[in-house]
Length: 178
Image 1 (tube, rainbow, N blue to C red):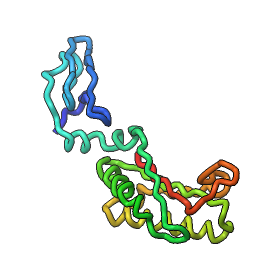
Image 2 (tube, helix red, strand yellow):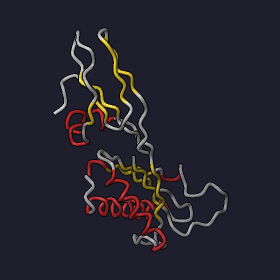
Image 3 (cartoon, rainbow, N blue to C red):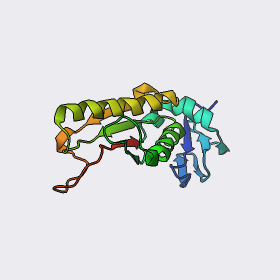
Image 4 (cartoon, one colour):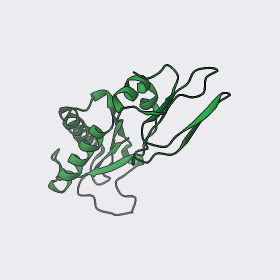
């Protein structure tokens, strides 16, 4: 269990840790290792630094960790033309997206549907939604909470390609994990 008043030096997404000088009117101490921590009490110098663990940090700081911004990781998923089947070339990206979501304690996943200007709007919209829901279902089946998944559809305002006359064989779906 962590002290009631504690400072913890947390590593960033790449595992790097900075140095933290913890000071009060009675003294100071330095934290320079991942998960190094020190308890604080009024009128007493900072205590002896110690190394805590992720379980204790997650228990005490769950809401703070949940609100901590992360670098987004992007994956593009292509589909077989006119179907909900993920193209064979995108299976590895789908697996990497699942791994990325699982690796984060509090992941947020956005599925971004794109518009194919070569298809009629109504069938295109239905196909895009079915694809996004299918991908969301795969994420949930892999253990990702459905509350962590958001589906966004930009329709014709964000087509797959902005190049005039560019052919579109299918409509990709972007997965953003943060």
